[in-house]
Amino acid sequence: MGSAVGETTGCGGPSGESEIVLFAVEGGMLAVGIVTFSRTHMNREIICQSCGSKLKPLHPEDVKNGFKRRVVDIVAKRPEDHKITELAGPDLDNMAVVTITMLPTLQCDRCGTPIPDGQPCKALTMWRASKEPEPCEWESEFNAPILWKTT
Image (cartoon, rainbow, N blue to C red; front, side, top):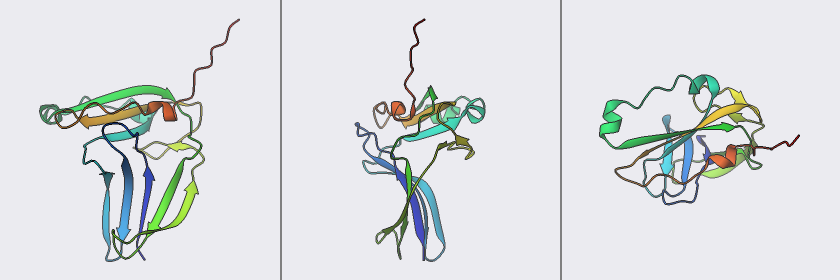
């Protein structure tokens, strides 16, 4: 039986709701990507400090095609409802929920390293400005509040 794994990551702004999905269905098809219901070109990632330090400027061809990138330094905070939903079915149009697994920490979307709460990391957003406005702010969902201490 095939399966698909995904996590809803919509921000509810003008760019619409999107879902990061890994599909594996009967017949051996494998597809990885972001399914965006409003057909935008937005991508969101939480990345560890190590992967963040390796970020290069956007490729000139991406810039020419209207892509923009926003990188925000954050302090990791796992949302209360941080989960992976596993789906199974004979094809992509006929999937049903098989399991829902709560995740204990954030994980780097580049290397898979766990990012425990309180650890510095980066929130990366990339979008095609020629096709859509700048995506809404979503980073605070994964960012621990700064606690001010007065002495």
